[in-house]
Amino acid sequence: MSLRQNCGLAAGQTGMAHVLRKSALRPLAVSVWQSKSNASVLPTVSQLTTLRTLCAPPALTSLREWHTKQHPWSFSKLQTAKRAFCETASSAAAAPDTRAKVVFLGTPEVAADVLFKLLKISQDSGSPFQIAAVVTQPGKVTISQKTGKVVSKPHPVQVLAREWLPPEVILFPEKASDEDFLATLEAMQPDVCLTAAYGKVLPKKFLKIPRCGTVNIHPSLLPKYRGAAPVQRALQAGDTEVGVSLLYTVREMDAGPVIAQETVTIDSGIQADALLFHLFAKGTQLFLDNLESILSKQAQEAAKEQDPAHVTHADKLEKNEGLLRWSRSATELHNQVRAFTPWPGTKQKFILQPDADSDGMKEEHSIKITKTVVGKAEDWSGKEDTDITVTKEALHIKCDDGTVLSVLQLQMPSKRPVSPVAFMNGALRNMTMHRLEDVADERKEE
Image (cartoon, rainbow, N blue to C red):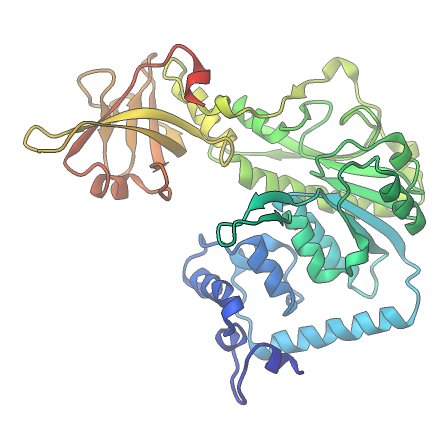
């Protein structure tokens, strides 16, 4: 069956809309066309990896680049790319691949972005490496809303890997110390392993397997912010300079010798999710730039040990850290919002009071705050400290120290994030808004 028939195309039909006619691809078709007019509409990883089966054009270098550049793909371009990929795969099957074997370990969407770039580069005829295997965590076990059965939902890295690689080289052990997994990995004889947000501790037996060692992309300027949440802790602290490190993996977390680093200056508005993608993209390039020296083992000789005197730790995020407390300054709260978006999120309880001439009832809601800036004192014009000044641009909240936090986006329970003007015309119609005083114990607000 031809590619045209696979995509449900009748004779003479061309263009992206027809390529994506099949009902199974309809959500992707919607995202494609929405993104042409609205760059903020992002297809999901699942949709993007479905699109991978139609083969990305040569200009595409990352998942995020797909929707930021809004490529005007035609059916003929997709067909040509698909044919080229199939020819490359057939050639590879006919002759043994003597390039360096890289085993990739990662789990979430940000790791899928790294893998996507590596997979694409590995398809080039002059690429010095191949992706010999992908290791990720087992899928998240959930209960299907349709069938009520227990199902395993694969993580983004596994979803992406399925579209590029045969199933026998996609591994998802419960523990990296599983003997069967280690035996399988050893039989592959990898030259180097690369980890990016894998999320599992690697035992000594694992670290002895790759010929040139295991290297890790860590989104901080080590030895600063070792641990699970370096980007979030950097934003929470209000750092204006962050970075990414490429280092050798040792038994102690994020303590190995550093191969290379890159410093990045950030503005006060960037949030954790966007910064994570940015730093991991730079970390991927660091890996590619240093791969030759890693394979020759020159990197091992040149790598620099970390200074124990400058070590700081980035503890794992806890759900109750998302509670906004008005005893903090507007700057602290703003940094909290951008550090904890999207998880655990930042929220607080608010009172919606009906206007004097309205018949409505007073309502109390736990509202998530998703985007803020530090406002000016004159932005707030309330009478009581708990009053909230609402304008089309922002909701202005006065903190206990007199500073003002301006909310640019918020989310009611079970609703989508909205702008202040949409909130005024919806939940806040004929209502005034007030903040509550801080509760005594944050754990009550989990």
